[in-house]
Image 1 (tube, rainbow, N blue to C red):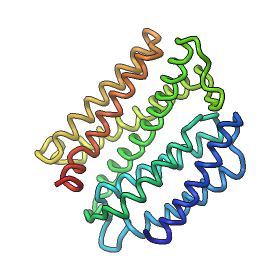
Image 2 (cartoon, rainbow, N blue to C red; image 1 turned 90 degrees about the vertical axis):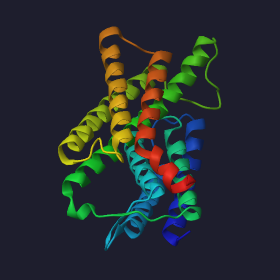
Image 3 (tube, rainbow, N blue to C red; image 1 turned 120 degrees about the vertical axis):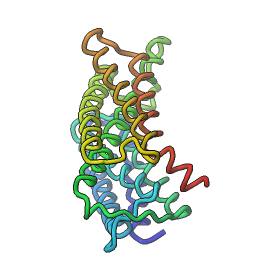
Length: 262
């Protein structure tokens, strides 16, 4: 593992450790040490992205590098969110995802050179897709916390005292805020795909397009149900999970099989 990755992993681990302690102590605001370690981890991660992905002769985007880009976006977004909200286990989980991704990149390196610098339209589409996915994954993490809190309350038990999670209403409100933003970005990603990609339903991209559209429909139905019928609780969690699974298979399914299995 190169030095940039090692330093980034160290500070992601430190941030996760400090955020976990903060979670146990039920501190609602992001403290200085967590913010500082997260920012340092992000800076070294950004340097790693520049060195390993943004190449002179193109961009190196094998599946694990794409995952690292998504996790970088997740970490940055979770840091911003944590300054405004008590986000529960969001920071430790996202930091853990970044650490695992760096380890995977070290043991499963790959090359997949593309040239986004020659196709700005495609670059816009890819950027929208990455950020929509990152935001909807954050929504998914809020949904999992919501499911846990809802389960404990329905069993007439308070959430584990050692783990001070955000209130149920805060989790639910944050969940739909992120779904709304992610849905908007996903809509833009699909529109740019239809406009700029000539082979949106070609043999190589058909499954991505179909699954992405199905995910879009799932999130659209969820937002409609919330607006018209006040959907909440387990139904909302299940639909959110279905949407994130469809989107994950759309973005990564075939490339995981082709690059890591075959």
